[in-house]
Length: 168
Image 1 (cartoon, rainbow, N blue to C red):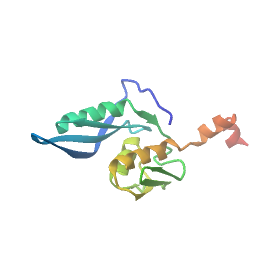
Image 2: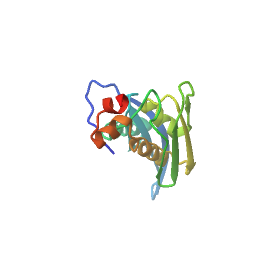
Image 3: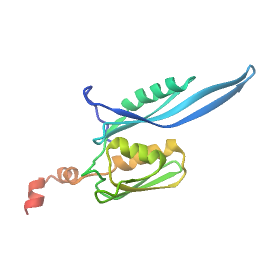
Image 4: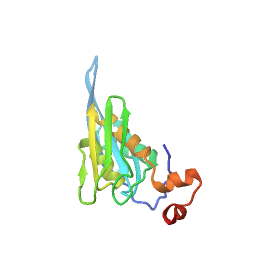
């Protein structure tokens, strides 16, 4: 994954993916805490995820947002879609992403939709197989996005210029 350092002037929007209430049974009774999975993104290919745990929901969301801002990656988004097909696994979650024509929309569900919207992907066909655990789905989707490479990246790795590719 290619970690990215973000400027403070870039506006990151946060999206809450899931809240989980955790119960700890002690001698004195039950203690409730909350775990929140948050995804942040600038809508232009920069995305991150974070997990926050606290005694109150708002504090858990705030901690998750701060953790997500420390965990940013840059993913390629070409004309509102992904550059090519890709699939990835994380834990029991298996995700499949496929580019779609303009106007198709975001055909994805749950946690995948939140990640793709935050990344700025507008048209994509996505399928999640296996586990529907939001934590693993978020990680698998970000992994699939971060493994994608656009034509400019590949040309740079091969040591050729894009002018040479398009002009013969």
